[in-house]
Length: 68
Image (cartoon, rainbow, N blue to C red; front, side):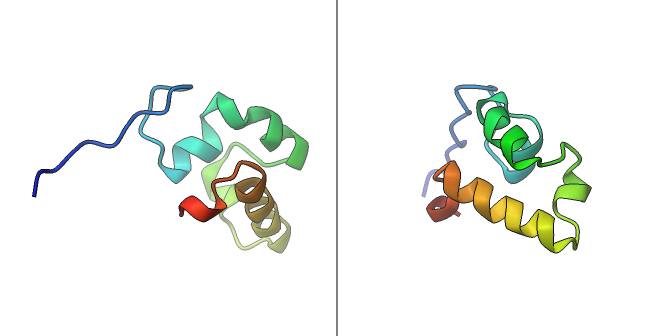
């Protein structure tokens, strides 16, 4: 089996991992702003139930929910 590198995000030219998508990729910045999602990865994935709900909303709005 041949190992292939993942495709880079066309918007930010990074490997689309969770941290990049949530904290750095500008393609999703409007949705993040609308949902009031913080840029700090530790704050986003903390134990606050409001943040957890925001992440689920983000994943659904960006159509990434079924990709994970």
